[in-house]
Image (cartoon, rainbow, N blue to C red; front, side, top):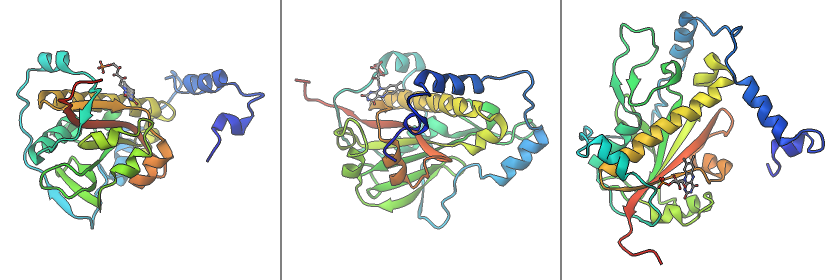
Length: 267
Ligand SMILES: Cc1cc2nc3c(=O)[nH]c(=O)nc-3n(C[C@H](O)[C@H](O)[C@H](O)COP(=O)(O)O)c2cc1C
């Protein structure tokens, strides 16, 4: 697709202001909205998997995540966007801690009204519409390749083998970033997991939740002494193609890069 929706509609009659106002107004909560009942939500969620299982793909069980050694207040003060990153080797223990902090399962939902075990992030309706993919050629004990994280089993599925760094470079606005990072984390939305309940508002919820996830990832990376950068500048369709997402029902909403602050001074 080489045109935006606004161009397709008719740039003469549909202004950008009108388009975003339409979305913003339509995604407001109204008193007349009738969300599905708890039973309906449970029934729909029973049809949807809590996490994509990628059955048939090789699985690597992660070690138990380590508690973060840095106090939260310190990590909040130390967190910053790493402007001069270099790829370093990341251990499987560090990867485990990073993924668990981002979206790991923390407590049971048994005896609650909610349809899923809870995670490290808040989630509208506890529906957990996000999935984490990542690419790396730099984690000890993992082949270079594309992976998916399963929070229920705290394992990763190897989706494809091979170093995709150069392909990923072409899909980021700042093309050097994938080559300078050790792991590229893709936060993706499975929109239907939220939209069946929250309709237009679900898009807000998916993005809000992605922000929670990314902040956890950023703080955990900081606590582990790693550099991190949050990235919104990527060519959505190209990243979705690499991940095998259709870009409509499932799409990438955020990217996080992890590496090490370069020892070289910035010129
Ligand atoms: C939604 C979002 C998107 C961002 N996208 C990019 C990006 O594409 N490239 C980049 O270098 N930094 C990106 N950043 C990082 C910001 O530039 C950075 O957070 C900001 O300059 C504040 O600096 P700090 O994170 O060190 O406090 C993004 C941050 C956010 C919250």
